[in-house]
Length: 240
Image (cartoon, rainbow, N blue to C red; front, side, top):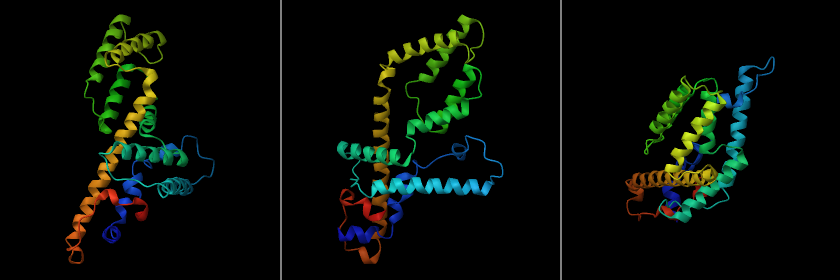
């Protein structure tokens, strides 16, 4: 283990905030400005408050990671599950949003002023593309087909405040969900599956960065005779 400490001591950024919490602390400024700022509240004071809040969240989350041993093994389901649980604990204690919550927040913010269903769904498509979320099953096309069907039935563009029209659309969406075996009551399970996928992807990135860092260091004269280290033996807590 001594070699691993020497090897990575000059590459601590691998296991710092960017490697572990780069996604967790990605909050838009508008998140902190939902209510109107008090009279006389200067912009720099607002930015200071945002910074202090982010630092508090960061310190709280890092505190969780300092107590947990993370095994960098994306191919081990147990390691992935444990990492996902640690990430969840860090989020909850620091008051951070999960990936699905961030997506939901983005949708609410970017669609709240859209009155009609068609523009709303086009905006959802844009959000999906920007966040690099795949639509492998072609669900968007099915949703638009369902919207076309409802609008033909009501003989006008569907507005989001049209309760009867939206109920018809939701019924069509339920048919699509049934086709793919998706049930609303299973949403917590789907969110858990998403968190596991995210955890695995982050462990893969950590492993890739650690291997690259070690390979780079091994090219240096002082490390040329050292044996390669299994990344699974590394303890992230030593580099936080």
